[in-house]
Image 1 (cartoon, rainbow, N blue to C red):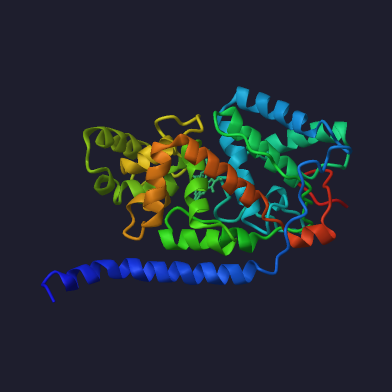
Image 2: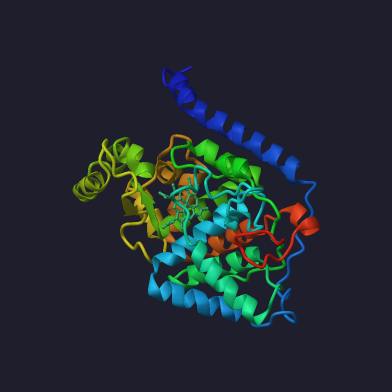
Length: 346
Ligand code: HEM
């Protein structure tokens, strides 16, 4: 045995362990989801009951994004936070009432998730054309697609026919939604648990090509390994000092914001992946996709999407349809079309 072999074995050990761990999670996830039947969603679900629905949503989103391009990010994130809790059933849109605890105050959402008023405005337009026909869950899913197109991203067909839930889950919102300071394996596990793959995780994270984060979510990153991952290049150092002045190490500023993709914050493109190659991802969870010692498959995907916009757009479209097809089986039994997206029907 040469003197090199034990050292190599040691460096491969974490990778092998990680692969075994991921394989185990994937297996559990397949078992967990194998009982679920395909969601009864179709492209022409509203063809006769509300033929103008896609047009109404597009026009409304157009004026929302025209008035503020950041609105595209708000709606896209709402869709993600809806689908990761009980499936895409509009549960995230429900307000707290005396009898229902909603998801809005769960830790990933509180003081952070916005855009509910945008969905209210679209809903009221849709209701005045087709009363009690189109679910809030469908409106949100279609609006998220339109949001992406309006800021330069790809088009995909949206299967529809979702029902709105009559419940929400504060607990699942706290456990299912990934948080920025979790490690790569925990984040991937949360996607696998819902039947989404490692590829889906990397492609859907590309949504961070638009929108902003608050200081409390990137403080650990900029006072942590940012300099290490970005290699202290002069440009990165300039950017890092701006981030630090926005987000002091201590003493407040928790809600100060910075773009997730500072190159093109309002354009849906692949520059998020360029940032990761430069080691400049804003959230720990972003940079981990490229820089973690466990980033084997994810690193290759980041490189692929950084060099090939078409590949990113194609995979993002596939992955977001898959995410949008996460349904709440209960909502097909006792779900409804809410009159007001914030409250279950009386
Ligand atoms: C991979 C795991 C993910 C983590 C850990 C994560 C975490 C976060 C955090 C912490 C923020 C900033 C929130 C704030 O500071 O108030 C954020 C913003 C955002 N996220 Fe994610 N996210 C993830 C995946 C996704 C996915 C899959 C999508 C959509 C498909 C998405 C869409 C967005 C958007 C558009 C914003 C900007 C929102 C705004 O400007 O207000 N994220 N995310």
